Length: 255
Image 1 (cartoon, rainbow, N blue to C red):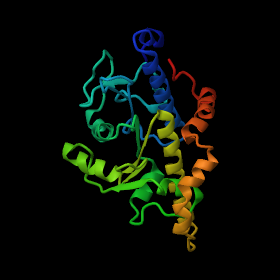
Image 2 (image 1 turned 90 degrees about the horizontal axis):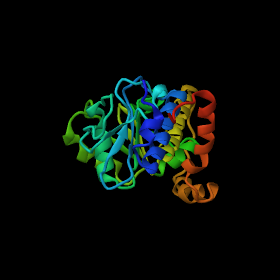
Image 3 (image 1 turned 30 degrees about the vertical axis):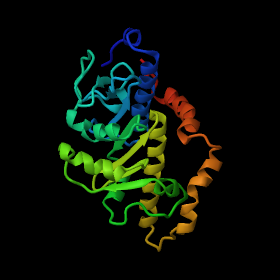
């Protein structure tokens, strides 16, 4: 279910091919980490250039099958702009198109329906400040109330408003969303988001009172993170290792 990588690679810019490879890797890593929902969520990435084109998964292809060549190039309305034997789910691009249009720095938008994420999104208190990993998420987290399956373009302004300048958005009763400058950044942000939700559910399952991190500690987390990562984005730090793991577990994404 893939086009010959060499033929497509010869027809696109080096910048587009690099984004295709990283985005395909992000899809396969999502499957490897168990966050995929069959074929029903999406990760989109902006193609470098003035045309405002995007790459998204071919509808019906499992995340662990996606390759750089099979990703479909579309415009801001979800229409295909290059030859591809694959179709996309236009409705699945409603959320993504809203974010891409409103946030110039949101080159990659990642949305999941993970079990842990949906479970916490259904809790009235949302994500709680009870773990170290939750601190970074809470420092840049918005919430968006559920309005049904994301098919209505009228929902876009409210979604954009609720995301604001945040990196993380919890879609109530629905799932998780992250944005990043690259697929690496969006994926690593989702790793932290998903981990924080998993920790919360396990802590709650223990049945005892939970210890909340004081607000004064939360207020200093951004500065602490800069020190801990030496000013380098977490996605940049972790991505090479994640690709090595993927090469061992499920190679072929760069085809």
